[in-house]
Amino acid sequence: MTAVDSLAVAPAPAPVPAERNCPDPRDRRRTELARYLRACRARVSPEDVGLPPGLRRRTPGLRREEVAQLAGVGVTWYTWLEQGRPINASAQVLAAVARVLLLDAAAREHLFRLAGVAVRPSAQPEPPVLDPSTQLILDALVPLPAAVSNSRFDVLAWNAPYEALFAAGRPRTDDGWFNSLWCTVTTPECCNPFVNRGEQLPQMVAVLRGAYGKHLGEPVWEDFVRSLLAASGEFRELWARQEVAARRTSLKVFRHPLVGVLRLNAAYLTVPGVPEAFVLVYTPEGPVDRERIERMAALSPGGWSNPCDHAGAVC
Image (cartoon, rainbow, N blue to C red; front, side):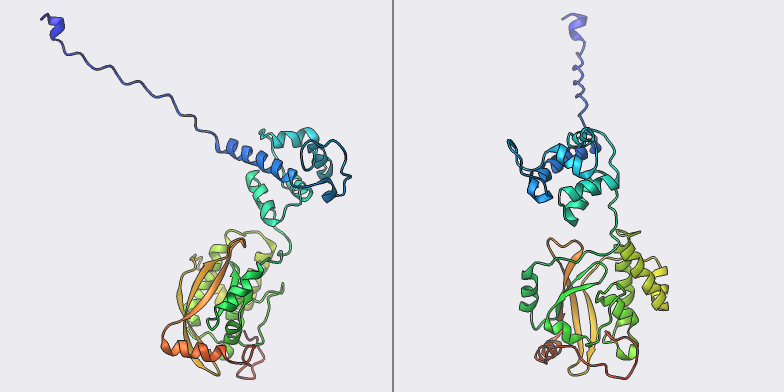
């Protein structure tokens, strides 16, 4: 064996893998935006937007030039938008395109997010649309009190036991909503059905603070928080803590003038198709609470009367 043969031959270095192509997230978003616009355009007929049907349409829906004309934008610009080219779209232009494509609130928000543009807040809240089966589900939960609320604590729907749990004269916010947080904050202690309010209110305010971060600058939310700050020093103190929390199952204690004290666990379920909405269901803590819930559910429809002559708000 030669000296050369006796030398250990080092293994050849492994080939360096080619750098993976990592697509720019902005490119992916533009591609999704282009696909979304084409799909939305295909779902709108000329008749839907007041145009004559025309002849020799090879594809369903509106033509690109029709969308551009109705939205007041250039045909070339809109074509580039549908081709996923790196162009900028303002909120005003996107709102015009959304109007032409007949997009509802959820579809409009999706369009803005794909375009990388902050969603423009509405001056007034859009009425929530609940599936008719939602009320059937709430009624099927009787004798358990149950309701549908949103992230601002507006109560959108409820069943008879939930109504029986609270006083009949529920105040509404300035924009017309029945709101459980508003009632909890503004109802005087003598008329408030919430026994462990001091324990639960900080949690409710922290939940509101977490939701508020998603709606910062929206007039409806800003007005609501401003109204609470003006109405309650206690709320001002809690709001200033800057505490944030998520909803979680918790024990809430209520008083009812006809059935007594009820210890109820609040559980939360999401509502498909309704952004930031949830089903609140109160379940009894023990056998006594179960019996009292059943007695309350058997009462005549409606909430109870204010137990004193206090002139303030009741909930």
